[in-house]
Amino acid sequence: MDRNNINSKPCLGFIGLGSIGLPIAANLIRAGFSVKVHTRSRTAENSEELKGAIPCSSPRETAKGCDVLMICVSDENAVEDILFSNLGAESSMKSGDIIIDLSTISPSKARLFAAQLSSKNITYVDAPVTGGTEGAKAGSLTVFLGANEDFLKTIASILSAIADAVYPFGSTGKGQEVKAINQILVAGSYAAVAEAIALGEELKLPMDKVIESLKKGAGSSWALSNRAQSMLQDKYPLGFKLQLHHKDLSIALKTAKDSGLTLPITSKVKELEEVLLKEGYKDKDISVLRRSIKRITNTTTSNLASGAEDMD
Image (tube, rainbow, N blue to C red; front, side, top):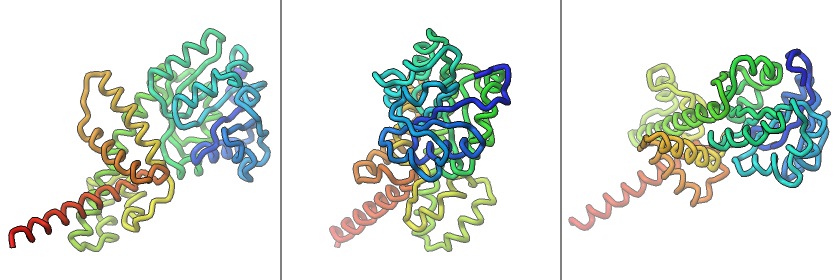
């Protein structure tokens, strides 16, 4: 990639075509980039949304001949495999190439990957995103970039095709640290909306009107505006998988622990998510937290009724 010509259209490799990655890759194609794609299952490589992309059989093939490799997968083990396995991307990359990792992983792993790749003069930058499937499809994601302002200029033309906002935080791993904070806020806001809706329903309030009024006040949040109706309808179309958020909370809690902090609210939400995962909701949107609050309410009501019968 010509780092002195930020308006050039570099060849891109893109690995990870899940519910977030596929629409991101599609937006890059629509923006006029030449894109090579790969995903572990291989199925999504031939999606109609990726018309014009070049399907590849491995990370090594995907990265070969490209200036920038983008990764959007579920966890750090997957990222490590993509980069350093027998068919990994690192083996076919050249000095001066760039890796933009959109995945959410631990800050320490991001720094480790960057150090391993620097010996070959390959730049690895963590660039976790937020905005869910809606943001991925609309090209309106927010990116937390583990790099400085000068490096952002180098890749700005790429990120502008997928995001409305990009915030550089100076150095490798810092993007992941900000993403951890983001996921803590997500945990608290979703859980709060779930509890608020549960109480409103128990009070027999007109919840559509209640939600509309709450959006205008201090209690407003992205979760309230975008997921309250799903909770009311008890339907959870995928925006961000519960399983992935649970993984992200594990990263956030470890980051906090390493910094000497305990996060009681985040820890409690993680416990609620663990119960839901055991109940089979791993692929549902995180708003399925509403099911957890409902379950607790029903259990409490049942226990109260049993106690009343014992007193008769």
